[in-house]
Image (cartoon, rainbow, N blue to C red; front, side):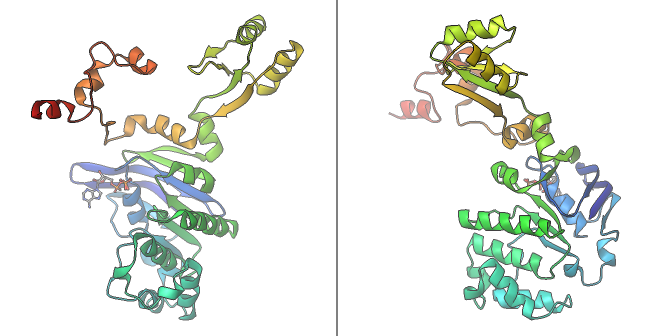
Length: 340
Ligand SMILES: Nc1ncnc2c1ncn2[C@@H]1O[C@H](COP(=O)(O)OP(=O)(O)OP(=O)(O)O)[C@@H](O)[C@H]1O
């Protein structure tokens, strides 16, 4: 396992990692999430002794990275897939790593086969696409058949087949008892891959919990109901003392009452339903809710600054421009008018 205890990293004024303590356990995939600049890569670099902590410790299987003999046999990592000697072939790149870590030569052919690069093994890696480079980085991580694997954004640049493949690789490794620690910004992908989540924001620990608990604790779950007899549905719920909120699309949203009970209630009233669906927020929604306050780099949606402040919330929610909103808006519209 990987154990962090009070791990801290300061770059001048910037506190990149702030007293992080958590344990990454074997047998499961642990997702490492956080907004841009949260400190994920810095944390992973400190695990691998590529950066010195300002304070705190990190141990791999009970030892400091520096104490590991032939470290690639204990921990394999993909941090920066571009960090390879571009003049070397894929085969020679992996062979150098194998020879300096006491790993038999035959493993090079095996991992090239595993990642699907056998046919380009003799080509220089500087000609590789983003996805091929990523596969080479994953091959390097798997080379020593280590107990612990860390992947920083492993699906970056991979095509859908490659994304499915790396997901399967990670799940299989965890199934075989390995410790798998992976960061990603692709929430839909993480929701399919990770069992457990560690979430950080501005260097601090925000959550260390199972995927299911994380979504449950950071999102709202409710039941959506829709009937061709919407008035009767409303009356029925009101009569049963159940509060319902009208959604914009004509359906009703009910909090805190199981779908089974609502369905049985409708059946007793012989009310036709066109929809009775439990709704659970996605990992993305839960993540955005938890990390909203620790997002450092805010982007906007392409509307001109004036439009962002001038559209009243009610009008914006209704989809129409507010009275003060600029006409024919969008970036450059004003400039185009001036120029014509
Ligand atoms: N070598 C460095 N010198 C100075 N500041 C650094 C250095 N490395 C990282 N930082 C700063 O530390 C903070 C954390 O960066 P880090 O790359 O670890 O975040 P991250 O969570 O991996 O971000 P992203 O999701 O964007 O990759 C950022 O504010 C970054 O600018």
